[in-house]
Image (spheres, one colour):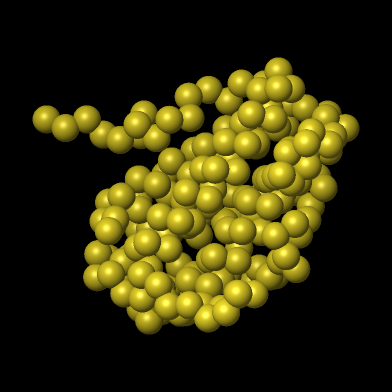
Length: 177
């Protein structure tokens, strides 16, 4: 099971990598961002919108945590996506602002939770049924999902001639004395 420190690290990594991806994407034309590239969500913008939709779905589910995590109260103001291909915006600047808002909520969540919170189960429902799973494990899935699709976006950006730099989590893990 992850520790609170692991979640804080993953939240920091997530925020930094999202900023890099969006900065790189902003260097491309709207046509390049929306071009069909054969990726699972089609284009760079399709992939970035999917990440926002997926994160929104999970953060709204996490509101059911028995600890009533204060950082998640802001999710009540964010519209739930209509599905995994929901388009929050076709404009990279507008989508970037939305992404930054989500990342701030994720960072606040990481700062607020305790190891005890991570050990508790969270109940949620999706199209396949009702589930009750360990919150720490769900957070690992949450961050893994982001990394997976951000890797796809990174590949699409690289194919467009834009390099986002080092993406390895190990660069964020502090050295030990």
